[in-house]
Length: 211
Image 1: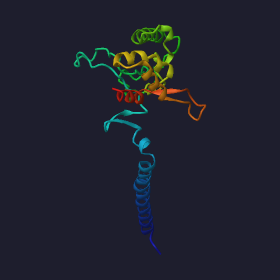
Image 2 (image 1 turned 180 degrees about the vertical axis):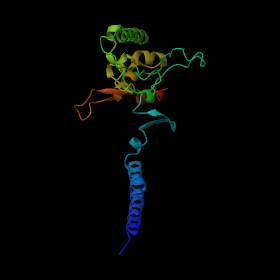
Image 3 (image 1 turned 135 degrees about the vertical axis):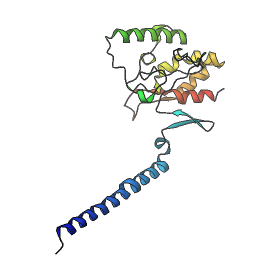
């Protein structure tokens, strides 16, 4: 009859064998299987929905980014960003001017917050002057950040507002740029979820191909 010590050793060995088997199955085989399937069937989504230009990754379809002019003094961290008039501009980011994904999140300020209303008023005036429209014409998403602070999309209204400014900066006919915007308007998800939208990076990449 096995002694209690031998019984315990057998139990420990059985547990060790089970641990090794499950480690191989769950820690190696399953991840490799899922990774291989995603690379074959869902390559774009599995690799971050990346967008490329001339073979170089320039961003993700899922993350917003800025389109600013180069700094006059790169060594000055306090120098304010200057939007580049040649590009369509995204909505503001609560994650900072650089759309830092580590700082993703909303401002957590309510509609009665004085700081928020002041910021929105200043943004509206700046956007109106930049795009050559009246403050009343500026759509809400041009002056407010999304919940994540990383939203890569803007409303068709904000995209159309920027058409004349982009066309003038690039020496293009407004009708050409406006048609490009229309081609990049995405409808509601499943026909009823969300709102029509325009991916800023995808639109700017198409714009760059016009010259």
